[in-house]
Amino acid sequence: MDDPLIVVALLLVAASATAAMTTRDPSRQALVLAVLGTVLAVLFTVLQAPDVALSQLAVGSALTPLLLMLSVRKVRRPQRRKEKER
Image (tube, rainbow, N blue to C red):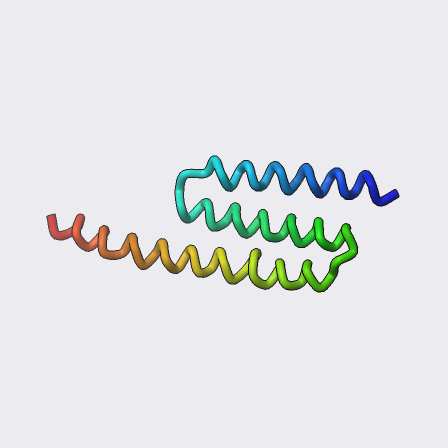
C-alpha cells in the first residue's frame, strides 16, 4: 500500500530537483529550493522518518531559502545603486 505513495513522492522530488537545477534566476531558485525541501519532507514522512521530516521542513524549506533570498537581496542592492548613479 505504501509503494505507490513512495513512487509519487520520489517523482515529485525528481521533478522539483530538476526544476531547481534548470532555474536561472537566483531568487526563483530559492523559491524552488523551498518547494524541494517541502517535497523532501513529504518523502521522509512517507518513509516513516518524522524526525528527519521536521528537520527538513525547518532547514530545507525555511532557513536555507531565507538565507539565499537575503544574500541575493544584499548582492543586488549595490548593483542598483551603481545603475542609478550612471
